[in-house]
Image (cartoon, rainbow over all chains, first blue to last red; front, side):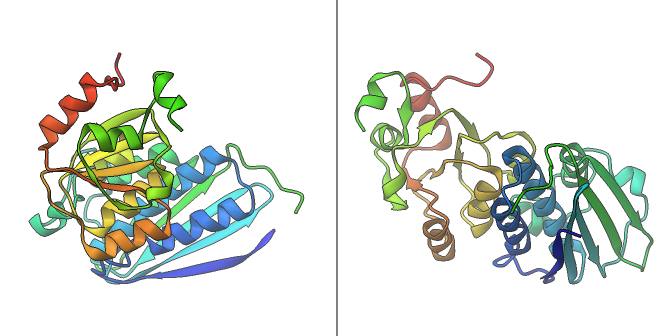
Length: 146
Length: 124
């Protein structure tokens, strides 16, 4: 591994701090001079995942791992889980409350947008067991000299 | 700084003039050039469709507007209809060097005025 694994906690329904984990990941990727487009794609995917964890996750954690072959982001939460992943992946499908929609989210675009931005994306979830995302970025990533 | 205006580019400073807007944060960064404008209250839409260099017009006023703008690489945000953002949003915008403008125009009228003044849509 090129850099030590980093973990960032995500707090349930904390809309003031929501986004902090993603901004930390973005900062780290900028510091290691990752490709600009990769940084942007990773930041967007992280933020979508973080907002989901804040809204549905009952606390969670975002982890960042980096090696020669890619950038790996894991987001795990302790929420109710997803009943039907196929349905959740469809653009426009959402179980968000009106309060969440008033915040500007909950349009059912988050998971599809993570998939759009990532090079590899896997989601696993079961009702009562939370949700785990694995988001990998390889395009534009090359081992830096520093 | 006035040169960029004469070359067909619209800067945030020019946007502030056109919209008679008050600058709420990051006044030092008004020379940024606007590539395109997006009008929405839906942050999910910003995250899904907006590219770096965009200016956002929105009626949403919470701190997630600033976080979304920062994550998406927006160059600034205009709050419409005279509704200012939350204090923590202004503080965050200053910290991340994101200009925030406040106009009393509605979303429709603000967008129309920008369109008339040299900022056409991205489909042109």
